[in-house]
Amino acid sequence: MSGVWLFKTNGVMQLVENPSAENGGDHQGKARRKALVHLPTGQMVSSYNCLEQILRGLGWERYYGGDPELFQFHKQSSIDLISLPRDFSRFTSVYMYDIVVKNPNVFHVRDVV
Image (cartoon, rainbow, N blue to C red):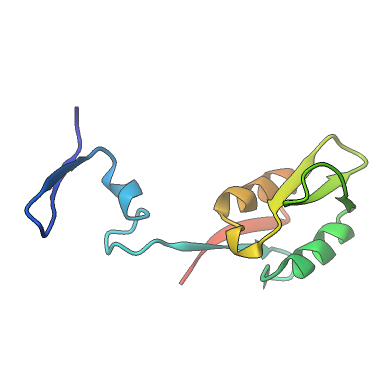
């Protein structure tokens, strides 16, 4: 068993096996926010409307099927499907990296300062 012992203010000790994951990888205890960036324009994706415009230009189409809690896109030339939470506030780096993988050299995920 390895890790770091943290001493809480109430005197309780806790073993944390991955201290970087506990505080988002930032030593100051602040989680780093991520942003999806469209590389050709340098534009940061700030809404699903913005993302949909870019994806349509790349040949992606809205997919209206399945779960009503998801915002989905598919490309007729592939079997790929991009599934995103309908609420943009839940659009995390996991979804951003899915878009990056399915659109190589078009998008990039960056830390927001």
